[in-house]
Image (cartoon, rainbow, N blue to C red; front, side):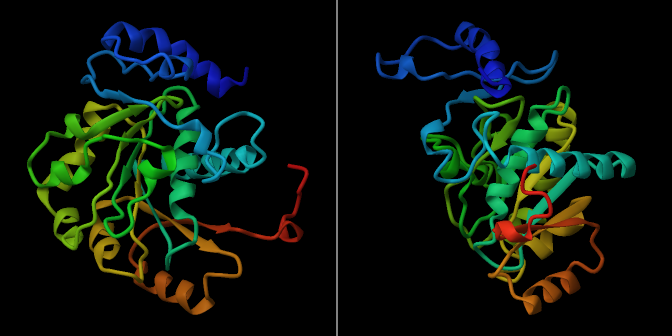
Length: 270
């Protein structure tokens, strides 16, 4: 069994000891578990992903996944730069829609979570087209908007998916008050809580497209750096230049080219 699934299995017993048995016979056949939080960290609700849908959404699910090594390389380069600069918060954004920023954010979080001691927190802050929870196949979960609206605490909206050691703050609701929420004191508290209380070495934010609304631009002063996502044959040069202009005062940690034809890959074996 690959290391990702082995990590899931090792954590299963801990979860079962904490949560009352409520599984049906069909559910019991599915591997469901969650990483153990470090000593002193608050208790977070475990949730189960639908691994059957990972392939459809291009989400890493096992060691044989052909894109895993690409995300490991991305993980290493991102972590090296962030650790060198002392950065802890990363926004993943694209000029326009459909570039693959959400897939990149999820897979980067999974790759980072598989590295011991990192525990990333992934936060869905795309309030126009939230997709992280849908891609992971989650159901019946609290929304980050419940936190921003004061209905739930940060701990109540934070989840432990049955993936390598990572936390998730998800969303399924659309709002046009995104910029207001993202520049609020509660946003500062979310960042501080993820770093200090949850002991995350890196907090990853999946953002709305830069050119689609003002949410991301309003939020950027609160994060250390941005990973810019472009799609081969889709993101136009003018869009990329305009996004870079808007990010002029922001630390751009790098640019990822998604959906590139295999002929453009320098070493397709790896």
